[in-house]
Length: 330
Image (cartoon, rainbow, N blue to C red; front, side, top):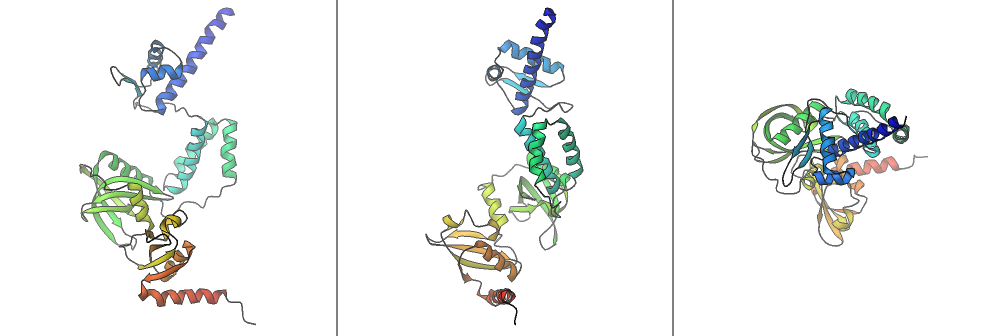
């Protein structure tokens, strides 16, 4: 009995340490031997021995010597068990549920994976996840949700710097063929965008992923340096494309751009600084109704300074709204 007690203790300790080592290797691309020794509270010889044990179990752990050397978990022939802490497990469940309604043709896969995770989650985590979704209503998948295969192909082309031939439809339904150099995929709510250099336009363009009808990968290209912050450019492009089609007006808002920017919905228009008490807003819409709706959403007083030819249309819509608010006669 004493002999069994002596051998089981070290075995359990070693197994726990191996799981901890595997978790560390999965959490970061590269670890030095010294870092692993410190995290595991063991010496270098024990780390090397544990790495050998992981290799025997089929985990492709790569080691490099010299300055900057260390350990990394390489891609293997099969998917190894993934070790997640509590927050990571909850984040994965939440992300999968969200993806099921924001990316087309991924719902069945996401639901199947959620079923597997639910069986593995401890009770305390199931309660955390269940509390969130017991009070959450999903409106289902948007018609603007891009296809999962399209997203993965776009991501691969961005990563590998491969040219893309697109059959694309603009917001008016007009079809065109484009040759582009993809740079970055961007997600905003349920919409996905591709930032790319359009060779036919000789300029940077933003493409809606759900409007890509077909795509074909071509040869490689040398990536161009984007001239500004990607996030700022995409946000500005999503907010309003001033050079695009539709009705356009400019209004002076009461309040500085710095004061209004944090609360002004980005889809209302492009905000510019005038002075400390006022700012300029460029607004574009497909109709007078949309223009008025965007102006109303600003929540501040405004003055029309450009777009006088639209005043008659805007007034007609505004008067129709006012008539609807009048009390019934009699």
